[in-house]
Length: 319
Image (tube, rainbow, N blue to C red; front, side):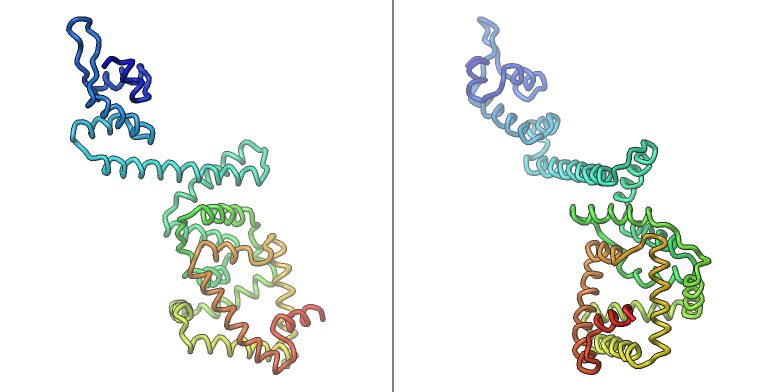
């Protein structure tokens, strides 16, 4: 059959058929009388295969490997699929970064350039590098011994794996959030108080860290002894707030100072915790278990004092 018939049977253009021939994918014979190409049924099968493979973005050089018997269709498709997935991931990252820029409504060319560069770099960080990035950001915000204690508290949950679009979005939001926070004034009275307290607590750092990490491990494994210890601590804390005037006054004073401190750097609510709960399954589980323990403790607190812990705190803040 001639090229017109081949085009009709395959749905390929004459130009495409000639191109595949020039690439050596098909080798039609030529009619000795008129020098026209003659296409066989085998050529049509090849052309249909080539057209199908090109329709799913298999490169010409890979198709040539298949035609020449140097590779197989499954192997080439796996390789192509991996490249497509990498391209999709790259495009998704670009999409998230662009959305982040749009949401911030920045019109400063210089700052946008720096922002894009920073966001792209943080998305490409390894698990350990992401942990280091968050730790350094927290230490920048909370200098001194208090910062070290703060990082130690969250350290078991900072090895985050970003493996879906929601996590990528939250990660970029967290990066923006941490980068935009003002650094704490080291001369703030509450900072000095916290640093002094942390200094005493961290005199023997390793045992403190080991005890903290073991407690988290036990809690994530739903160890009943650890759950009971935390529950009793919550009840004891509520008891002190309710019955110990000195403790209640000191706590209320510290609560007021902490609000003033965090407001000074635009740190509100539990935004960091909420982000980390999305990025770290362990932290999400840790919060859920603590919420369960608090609910159990609240039953006894309400029986003893007539109000649950949240109501107790509300009373404290309103007085």
